[in-house]
Length: 207
Image: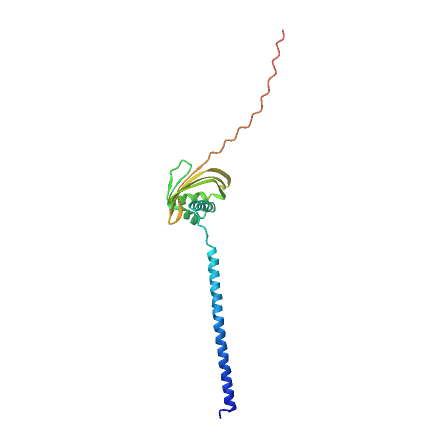
């Protein structure tokens, strides 16, 4: 009875199924750690690549101030108010070269800046000969500038000097004082006048 072909076949089929399940289990056991290791390596590589986007060497305070000045001048030329406000303190004081009282506060400065900026196109401001000094959380800088733009439809150009005082607030340098003055334009030399012709000597009167 135990040698019945059906029973033998059933036993053989069951044995084969068990072997297949066992092989599959062993295969999964050997593949899973390798797959997990690959996934772990991918995550490690991804985190490493994201870490490389961060600066390895932090900027010095002088370099941060220099970047703030470049950022401020770029925003000033483009009329980017949001970026400009990021570099100016809310309690900033502005002093210009004209005979006018100082401007106190970002809101008051913004109103005047927008009036002036609306009259200008093709604005360009270049900075030269910058000197930066830092003492704790206070820094100051002075530089020369060259300005070119079309103002009220006319080409305009001027040069001058700027001195700024900055404070480090919440680990970010902001301008608290800006004193800008335009240099007087050099006078053009007068054209040389033509030499006057000498008059011939008078002839003596006849006797």
